[in-house]
Length: 130
Image: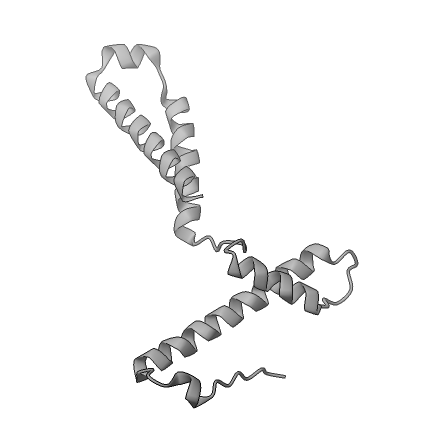
């Protein structure tokens, strides 16, 4: 069963064709987000392993969460890569620390400073994005 939403033409007086298209896309996107959030709420509340059953209250809760911007934010692959880079670069700094090499070799010192800078930058940006 598919759900179809109709908006009377009288309500769209003054909308250009591009505005109507954008309204259609935005409405479809909102409906998709509402369905996904309702499913997340149901999965969190379902204490049995039976089939999912989304109630009116769950849809209403999802609507409130989306309206207030409290829904689960989507994390793209870029965010995940950044978090991995932050962890790996921090680990690399710890592993590559060698007191005697840092005192003897100027090239190694430069490499270590760049590695520390990358780690600091990656951790800072990853933290700010969350």
